[in-house]
Length: 90
Image 1 (spheres, rainbow, N blue to C red):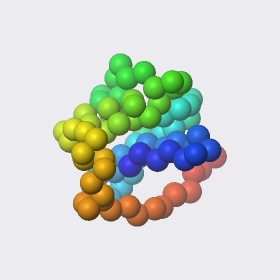
Image 2 (image 1 turned 135 degrees about the vertical axis):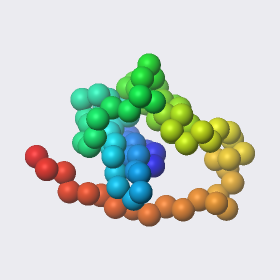
Image 3 (image 1 turned 180 degrees about the vertical axis):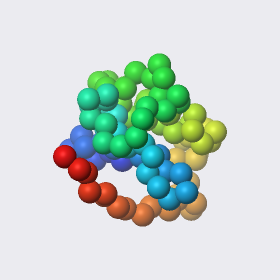
Image 4 (image 1 turned 90 degrees about the vertical axis):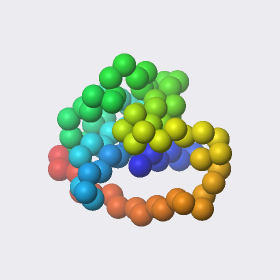
């Protein structure tokens, strides 16, 4: 899941079998990593300013093998969103 708000809050989450295995903030990468080890698909992507969101989509493309074209992003007929914010242990 890629999340970005108008308040510049960002989150990238990758889940396998319903379990979040990687969770980080693309804008504050790599300082803000909340779960999991870095994925090989993150390598050489320019996270942070000004490429946080584009790098998050590139990482998702690498992980899913789905090309996020304008047509794919504009077609909401196959989207499903379920929100959950797990507790972060400090």
